[in-house]
Structure formats: structure tokens, C-alpha cells
Image (cartoon, rainbow, N blue to C red; front, side, top):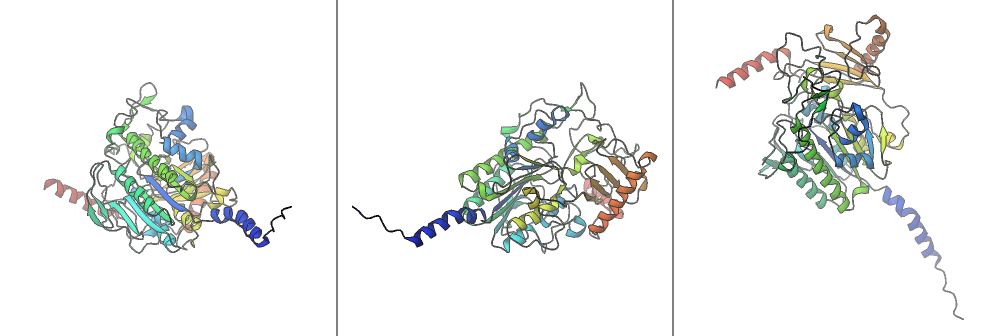
Amino acid sequence: MTPAPRCNVAHVVRLTLLLVLAPLLHAARAPNFLFVYTDDQRWDAMGVVQREQGERGRFPWFKTPAMDRVAAEGVRFRNAFVVNSLCAPSRAAFMTGRYNHLNGVANNHTPFPADSVTHATALRSVGYTTAYIGKWHMGNQSGKRPTFDYSASFVGQGRYVDCPFEINGQPTPSKGWVDDVSTDYAIAFMEQHRDRPFSITLGFKACHGPFDPPERAKDRFADAKARAVPNLNVRAIYRTPNDTTPVAGKGTALVTADGETRINLGYFRCISAADDNLGRLLDTLDRLGLADDTVVVFSSDNGYYHGEHGLGDKRSAYDESLRIPLLVRYPRLIAKGTLRDDLVLNIDVAPTFADLGGAAVPASMQGRSWRPLFSGKATDWRQSFLAEYFLEANYPTTPTVVAVRTQTAKLIKYPGHDEWTELFDLARDPYETINLVRDPAHQALLARMSAEFDAQVAATQFRIPDYADKPDDVAAAKQAKKKKKAE
């Protein structure tokens, strides 16, 4: 009889430990980060939201399969907001986790401070390689993007076709639709850094005006119209009856027929083309075997009016302007198809990345990590937030605004114009059509929201910063425009 092989106890122990610990060690691997955001995409400009809204959806024909995929494979935050609804300030808030009255960027024409502390700063401290790709803005700031290892970006608004890029600050021509080019750079970066932790921030130009989609998307949603909503003909309080300045937002129409209104389809075609590129990025993560180990965040730098309150563009504090899409996918921590209604903000992105990446969250960051929300263990999440916007000399149609919002109410103040103060009961009036500030029946709500406003002002150390434009700058800006036009 052949004797049984002798058991190597040490080998068995090692094998057992490997089988038990390997999944844990793999799960503890530092995740990659891919943060993709569009420009001016309102919160409901996604197919998944339109389907959820049903008869209340303004754009039931709109489709965004890649965004819908991220929502289905991760979490969709249904109450996500920016703290300043303007391109450059919101981008600065995303990166620094700080309010704009503290982070150095209060308007669209201020460069991003080179000494800023960002999520890239935190992640680089623990071994990440970081990249900024695509639209940066911050006025016409040029050069390698501060705090990032690598940048492939363009100056100012750039242009949709054949946009000149700067690679680490070096001018480089490009061919094709700008967001396709940015996506190519992001894919190349992922391929080159697949074997070590990376963080990519990718800013699309879409869907900022002039709404020029690529050829493949030019005929999408042909002849579609938008459904009317109750606040289309409710004029913003700061736009007085004597104010004849046209609203921003080319193509916006307030006259409805058969319950519908014309809509700028170029806006939606640009988002749809950006969605194509989000799909390319997701497919690349799959191809490289990185999907499970990458935190994918999709969002936008601010919302956008399509006629609501008689407005186009963004900037002010009604929900169409403040509210943004926000999707997060990270299979190792987030259950598929999760929905969250917590109040989450753009200043939360930076501390979340630092936290998940294993870095200390910088003390300067005012946002909060979403980790407890991913696990469903948050017990003391924020119940309100402060929003702000500072007058821009070259865009005087929107005044300085400071607002506090809770889940069910909003108080908006316009410094220097107490007569414009607005109070809304969002639970009963989600379209913000009835100002309750002088309604005797709602003085208790006003008192509660005023106290919340004061508390948020104190908590955020709010002030109108020295680097914000001043009212006196408006006249100078008008004179400069006249002079330029005369030349």
C-alpha cells in the first residue's frame, strides 16, 4: 500500500491565510478616481430622471444611456447642489472643498490661486498621480493646472471644434470635437497609469453655449419640445418690470402651445454627445480591468434655466440653477441602484476623495465625506446649506445673492435689497412661485429660516470677499465694453 502523503502544516496555514486574506487585501486597495463633469447641465437633464418624473418631466424624450448606467451601477443623489451657481467658482469649490468667499474664486474672471489645497494635493501626498483634463476656465488662466501632476486643458471657454490645448502648459493643436479630444487624453492617461493609483478630473465644455454638438449628434431629438412648468411666467424678483435687459439663454421661449414650449435642442445634443464620451470612459475601465477599483463621479458645475422665472443661464438661487446631477459608482462600497435624498454639495467631492484615498482630509475643507452615506450609516448629516453668488461687473443683471436651503424650505436674501427677500415652502411649492416672506400665516417659518440663515452664515464664515467685484465696477465694465465696441 502506498503511504498517504505527509501534510505540510506550514503550507496549509499559508494557503488558508491567503484564501481568507486575499479578498480583504484586494478590497483595501486604494481606489482610482475618475471625476467627470459637464458645464451647465441641470439636475433633470438625464434620461433616468426624466423616466422617474414621468408626467412631471420637462424633457421626456431625452436619453443619456451612459449616465443612466452609472446611476444603475451606483448611487444617484437626488438632492445635490452647488454652493455657487457659476462655472469657475463651482469648479474651485469642487477642487478645494471650500466656499468661494474663502477659496479665492468669486467670479468667472479670477485665476485659480496656485497655492490652493485641493483633492489632488491630498491624494498626491499618499502616492496618487493626478491629472486635470479639459475645461478649466478661471478667466483665461494659462499654463499647467495648479496642484495636479499633469494637465491637458485649454484656455478660457476654448471652442467646440479644433480647440487649441495646452499639455502641461505647452500649446498643442487638436482636431475634432473638444470633448472627444479631452476624452482621448483621459483614456490615454488611464492606460499609462493603470498599475498605480490615479485621479483624473475631466471637465467637459458641453453643454455651455454656443451649443455646437458634433456631427453625430446634430439631428438627435429632432423637433422635440419641452413641457411647460408652473414657474415659466413667474418673473425673478430681482428683474423688475422696468428691466428690459433680455434674459440669457439663446433659444429659450416662454410662450407655450398645447402645454409645450420651444427649447434649445443644441443644449441637449451637446449633453448627449458628452454622454457618448462618458460611455467611452466606462468601457475603458472595463477593458483595463479597473471598474471595481475606480470611484466614478459624474456631475455638473451648475444648473441652468430654460425659461423658469423668465430666465436663461444660471447664477441666482432658484433650484433650476443650484441643483445638479450627481452620480457615484464604486462597486466595492456602493450597492447598485442606490437612491439618496440627503443634501449633498459640490464642496463634498474633495473631502470624499481624500477620505476614500486614505489621505487626511485637509482642515481647510468645509465639505463632508460621503463615506457614511455610501454605507447607510450617516446619522448626523447636514439639514441645510448656504448658497452664494457675487455680483459680476460684466454681468450686472444678477445681483449678489445669499440663500439658505433645507429639504423643505428656502430663504433668499439680496444684500442691499431687503425688498427682494424671498421665502418658499418647497414641500408645497417646489417651483418657487409663491413668496411667503410677508404672509402673516408663515411668520413662524420665516423665523425658523432666518435663524438657520444666521447659523449657516456663522458656520461657513460668510462674508463678501475683497476679491469679489464691487458695485462701482459695473460702470467701469460698461465703459470698457463701449470703448471696445467703438474700436
